[in-house]
Length: 265
Image (cartoon, rainbow, N blue to C red):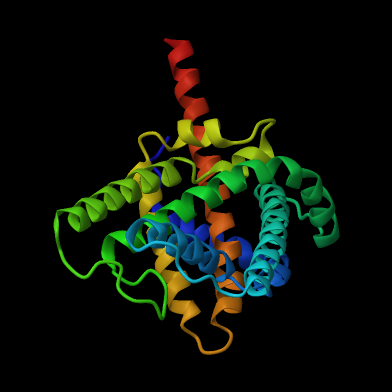
């Protein structure tokens, strides 16, 4: 079995989206919710935790604002998981030479949501940890408008930054190993975490490259005035799921071919 080719995989995902544009339609609703809500919540948590450690109890923002962000984040998160499940099912059908209607994809995808929510929450927790640790590691300003965390560069400051940098690296490694949890969960009778961990072994750097490409793409598109967050969710969302699903198929096939060769020896 040939090695995973990043550019060819991305090109194939683009061809799938051209072949069935309703894949993009699945992500219209999740894209309508503020993509940055979860990041803001992470920033708040980072602000509180660091504030308690460094200078005592920080001033709390209005509770109704925090609750609104949490509500928007939870609803948007649910719709994104639902859209991802439906997209994976549609891509599977396309790879098999047939087309799954939008209504059927949503209906079948909804049945996958309860199980998919478990690894999705794990993934969200890891990404939140990465954002919080990286923020502390590289900047004195974890939240806009507050004073610097540390006014000097003493041993405690350096130790904190190094620890957070190390935590970010661990989080990144785990995040890439679990990068294929969504297609693994939707297409197999498990939560997908163990399967993804196994499939990504030996392919970490290739998956990291894909992760980096879509991260940069999302960042660039998000800079579009007024509608950047919406466009990022609408464009990057289906592309990412398409690539993850294609990578899953490739690595599953490679694994099966390897096992067959071992059995024949």
